[in-house]
Image 1 (cartoon, helix red, strand yellow):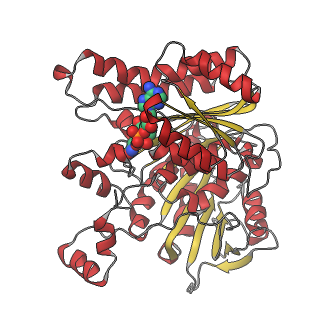
Image 2 (cartoon, helix red, strand yellow):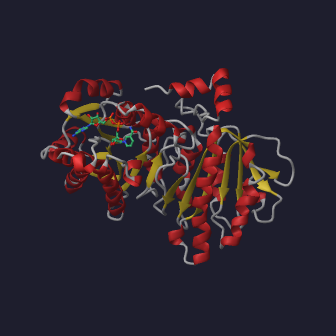
Image 3 (cartoon, rainbow, N blue to C red):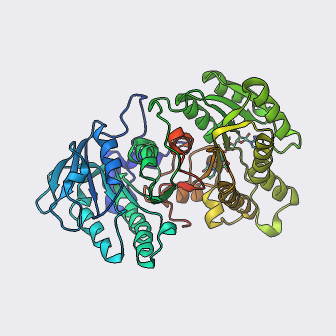
Length: 468
Ligand code: NAI
């Protein structure tokens, strides 16, 4: 369903009306368009707190991009510009800055205690107003769980509050702010995450923290088609978010098995035909489903690389009015089916080395929604499942979840208009997301270079005001 308000406020009359009445003025988000599009262009400013370790990896990736790279200098809390590599031009922060930046990237990994937080102010205070529309703020810190000293852990935890607050300030111009928490020594694992969070692929992801652990060296991939040679299963692929996931993974080179319930076959076939994939009719709550899926995978491909548990349903009623089949179905589709399918695929050793499992949670599973006790329970269970499984997976396999906020699909088009409008506007970007926003985040998890990204729950919600 199209967002008429977003279109209206971006006309001259609409802009004036919104300003006069103090209404939200969402900016159209720039999304990924062409396969050969660089992940970043324009002027990019990087900087680092003294002693930071990730700046070299950041500078080398950005130095090889078409962006004009600048390194913050002339401030004693920041490292000198030599750390930014010879591609970065020093930019003194003590003078007037004329440029507009498409991204501000700050490496805070060197912070030792909370007094070092001053470096954040020194880097962002003179530059934040120079962030362009649809720009990106990205901060890199050390995962506090890996900091032994409480003062150091506090400093790195503080980055989360900082980034969430910045996201709310820059959201007005369609810009985002996110945080990467890395484990010591995980600098080499940053590549796919920098590419995602700095690009138009993360247009609707803001105020998020992604944890990156140390892993084996990421394999070299073709940035245009990083999933070449991979086989993906996408459940609920006939429409909405699932169809977009199937299309996006195929765009990135994967061969896709789309799965949906038998009544959705005609629609599913259209989706899979267009991407030269295969369609599988299956109700994932059927007790024979795990075997049926595993048999299909074995027969056609001999194994699977990417398993995307997207199929989901809502059956809303307040708890006292909820019939038992609403409860049972919602838990079965959104949660139990995923566990049973994974169990069968892993038991039969069909999930290949460096495989990826991605589940879909929801903001409803984080914050709880009125009339959705069944759905919130299931979607919160998804988080528990992912976090527990992340500790058990082997052979380079990772498991992560996306928690979408308000995404424009048939599911949300069916909402009453007042709830729909509230869902659209109650986030830092004042608009709903598109199915492709969820799909792009899943493609980032699936990237072979995301091998250090495990056990995450990242929200694709425009930094919704609901929940944490
Ligand atoms: P949708 O209703 O448009 O699509 C869901 C798909 O799952 C449908 O094609 C449906 O036939 C399929 N499906 C349902 N039960 C199935 C079963 N037993 N076996 C096989 N396939 C089955 O939903 P939408 O909006 O695309 O949502 C996709 C996922 O994202 C779901 O898990 C949903 O809970 C989640 N989500 C969506 C949000 C949104 O704003 N649209 C927000 C948060 C989460």
